[in-house]
Image (cartoon, rainbow, N blue to C red):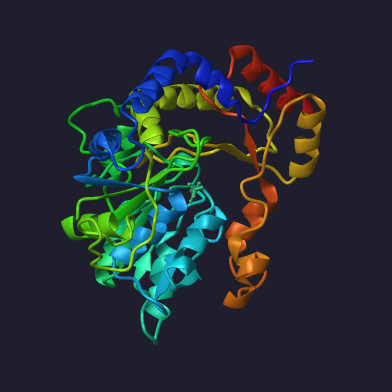
Amino acid sequence: MMNIPFFDLRRQYDCIRDEIDRAMAEVHQKGWYILGDNLSAFEDEFAQYCGCKFGIGVGSGTDAIYLALLACAIKEGDEVITVPNTAAPTVSAICMAGATPVFVDVDEKTYNMDPEKLNELLERRTTELPKAIIPVHLYGQPADIGPLLGIARTYNLKVIEDACQAHGAVYYSKLSNEKRAENQIMNNDSRITSRRVGSFGHAAAFSFYPTKNLGCYGDGGMVVTNDEDIFHKVRLLRNYGQTDRYHHKIKGVNSRLDELQAAILRVKLRYLDSWNERRKEIAEIYHDSIRARDITKPIEMAYGSHVYHLYVIRTWKREKLQNYLKQKGIEALIHYPIPVHLQKAYEDLGAKEGDFPVAEKCSKQVLSLPIYPELEEKEISKIVNVINEFCK
Ligand SMILES: *Cc1c(COP(=O)(O)O)cnc(C)c1O
């Protein structure tokens, strides 16, 4: 039987082995492993890729969010708004900064922060306002960042994008809805004003965890920003708050992207667009060929370009479908089965079942199918066939 794993990083390595091995060997030749030329080069290359002036390599995506919050002057007791249906690290980073997470529910079509619900939450507030929002570009689809930025401006909130799942995703800025609709058929038109996610907020966080669209061979992350102050602060914070050797201006931490990872990521960055294109192709095949009525497929909004970190379908028969796929050798996973506000670790926030109905409903129905650039045509067909068969 053909077994189809949810991820298979060896396949990617096999495709680029020579370049990766050479890049790593060069680092060993130099014998310089922390804060070196590869990191500086990759910081510039990745920031530029995102349409940002500055990039600061850090130890993980979690640290990128945490350090961006500190650099935005978020402090003990401040409130920071995010969504409940995210990877838990979005929320742990808020707590690491000493801040209190506040949740707002998501839009059922996109699984991303619902601007109307954000607005309601802020309008209802009679006590002190939260200080920042962290929209998550979940599964690789940009959150509707235009309206979110408008609301943030009205209430004077800092915006930190959690772009850990959305390397290369584009949001079409400054477009009317008509223009956005047109865009669906002409998004290769160079006249369209569009920018990659990560370039919209005061700062953005990326993760290079191995399975992300751009991943290294260990942990890694980056803060990107156009704000010079935030840039300088994160640079100090990630390296013990040190200005010159043995001179510490602020209390910092140790969170750096190392030279080996930076060298690997420089190689992989050159493939990111073609890998994302392939993910989109696979998503299109799924979209056109999965025919079951009981299954809700992802909707790509006209205001953005989805990079399909995950291809997430929804069905009320989720457990049965997952088991059926498993019997046929296909691994499908759930992102995420328990929304963060219902996790044991965050009990103290006082949220309960029913508080965020959309996120909760989705958590019971979502199922992620394998989607990675190296997935083969015959594997894609098998996945489609097995699902269509199950739903007959
Ligand atoms: C992966 C991920 C993170 C955390 O990144 P790490 O590098 O694992 O710390 C944060 N937020 C989201 C949405 C993620 O997918």
